[in-house]
Image (cartoon, rainbow, N blue to C red):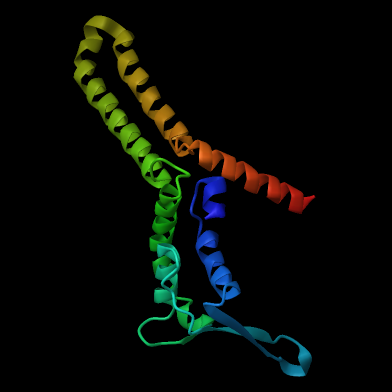
Length: 192
């Protein structure tokens, strides 16, 4: 949640870090098995995720989703190799749940991803309007000259501005801004 709050984006690393958090809190265990290469060179590690018997009722929705998708059905053990080609499909759902969690916690008034998408749709619609106006005014170019091109260009400039500023439009609530500032300060403390 913190990673998503600070940069306003639910990155795959935010979803994957939840696995480490769940292991730290005792919902699963991560075991590493090292393999030696020929003459001690090469080698590697394989990781196995094992579900503990700790009940998952108190988990947040994105944590439950991750745990349920990591251990499907009655399966209590998975290797990293067995989920390598399948786990990416759940990341989008976890990211969506992370955005919902930010809204539920009161850090944002609305889903940041929906805000960005809304601005992108707005910009595309305005760009379409600019093209339509351009086609409608094109026949008038003979009488009015190049000045006929200015309204479609102005409308197109608004569309481009919408595309540029759209990603920065999600706004944190006061609570969200204060919490994000605390975590950024903590990050600075750790980096120094």
